[in-house]
Amino acid sequence: MERSIRDYQQIIYIVISAVSLIFFIISTNDLLVHNKAIIHAGLTISVGGWIYWVFTVSLIASFVFLYMFFKTVSNLRKFAKLINSPSKQTFVKNLVDLEKLAQSLGTEEKRVLDQAKERWKVK
Image (tube, rainbow, N blue to C red; front, top):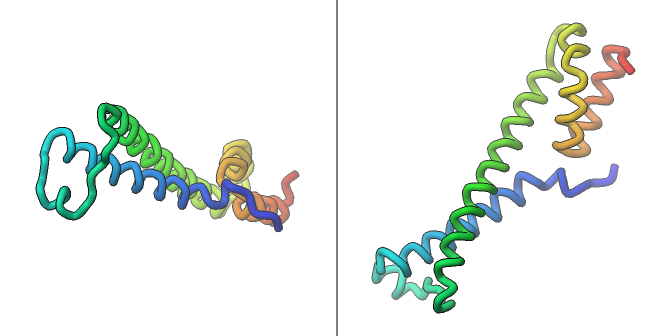
């Protein structure tokens, strides 16, 4: 089965948020704290007046991508809860939500949903 970018979205979100947090910490140090340990370690940003933009963008990116990561984890938990439901009525009632979640989560969830549809004999 062909893999899509949605299969790797959790990894992408956590990597981007980690890099953003690193840039946020470094820019905060350069702007406010001036901690010598970070400066002597060579972790400084020499961007001149752009440091305010680095600070702002890294702060926003950190929050956005952490939110997206936790939202994806929440959707995975909801999908697992609904797909493992012991009753057909619950499965059919939440089928639209399951299809939306499977579409947004990736190919593995689509495959699991198709198997559940076959198991419950639902189209």
